[in-house]
Length: 103
Image (tube, rainbow, N blue to C red; front, side, top):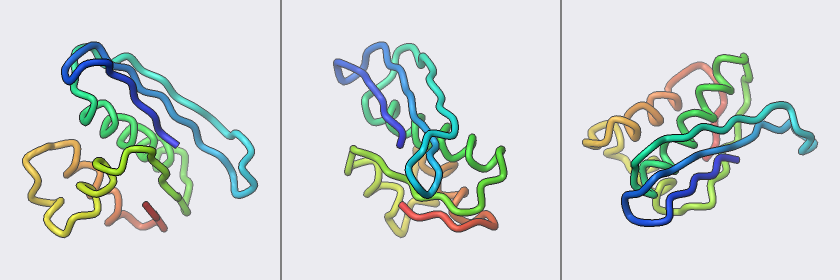
């Protein structure tokens, strides 16, 4: 489950998340400082980084959980491939890879 922090609409942000197995046990985690960013982009970076980590480690079934509905809604939109935000496009490209991904 990715998470992101940024106090103001555009301030210093950081992200973190973890990957768990089917029983909920911790497998691995990540964290990263982003520098100046918006809350929305911080959440997108957390989602992207978690998916990238899962893909690079060969996980075949991924359930993405996010606590920010706005980010999930944008990713799930039918026009997400055309979204001007490159992170949204990168995240949606993960759904077309050969794995089972649920959001």
